[in-house]
Image (cartoon, rainbow, N blue to C red; front, side, top):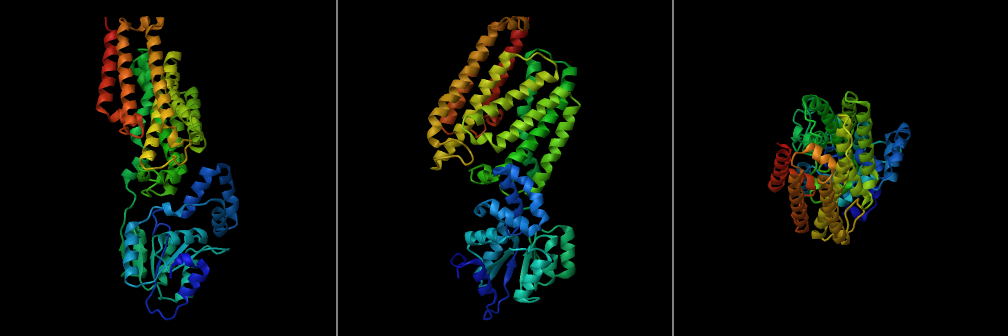
Length: 493
């Protein structure tokens, strides 16, 4: 009797009241058991992503009770339950039981609207029980409902948390999904023969991946003004290191926030769906708590650098938040924002050391990073085109925009080379270099490098982040080394 053919209430009552079936039904929890996430947390994140200011309504909704909160969230957001990360070990177990003729009941504390949609998506369940009205179907409430329907010992139950202890007390057999040692002890006291279903659990490496430490290399731009001004000294490094650490921590906080906001879009992306949050490798709640903690420590470290640096790193966080919430959805503006964030790092490095801000350097960085940001968008569009998609989820681009984006990326990259060429002929260069004419070789190398990554992007061989690509690409690393050698040689007597 397919679930999709009936209203959820009628179907649940019809199956739960059947007297002809002697098989004990298997009841499974949803959040944390069948899925590697929590629908309440998913709904809160989606509300913040789509309507950020409405997040301040949550306390008022919660004051009326958790059932009222879940109802309000179900009304406010249209959650795509088909994207929720599933615990495959639990699903395999359910399918095996179903194949053996057993009735499978989905009993969840999530709102009925979401549970119904998930049940219809999976097409596995014979009935559902969920939160509706004023009853939050968790803990004692869930146990009472199941006893009313099946009687004590009239069902087996799969759960994952302390909230399921009361339900297990009334179940015939108990199954626990990835229980902690403490929860397992509590469960064994009730059901010594309880079975454990092991699946993937959060690992330290998952949390580290969520922080994206490979992206910290971008913060070495803080050191660029020191190198360009030939102001390399131990004192300068001592001032820049805490600034670098602060930027890394704040950047990781931003990456977590961006991944929370972009959950739905990431799950629809060919590679981003494997990120720790999108895949369910780490819980949403953990990321939501880790984000402000990293931000607080990062800003605290900035306090010890200088007040102007604190202002800049705060501006960086505000701009990146605006990017995550709004700017990334607007074509061209998103690329300009990314270029601005890279350039801000260079500006901050000069501020830390009280060095004069070079307009040449700022212009060069702005054009170069705008080119890389546009290549990033071109690469994403190319990947969508190869999958026969016409848009990028959560972005303001169409696949048809690819030729224009490619032209703009090339124009911006070549403009950066022009700025560098003009800088080589500027009077200030003669004061810094004994052989400034040697710097023309850098212009040639940069022309080659930009042309090469444009060619690779056109062929569909570019990494989705050109900066990350450059850090791993042998040709890019050799080019950077040659540039460093040329700068050193031009400075020697």
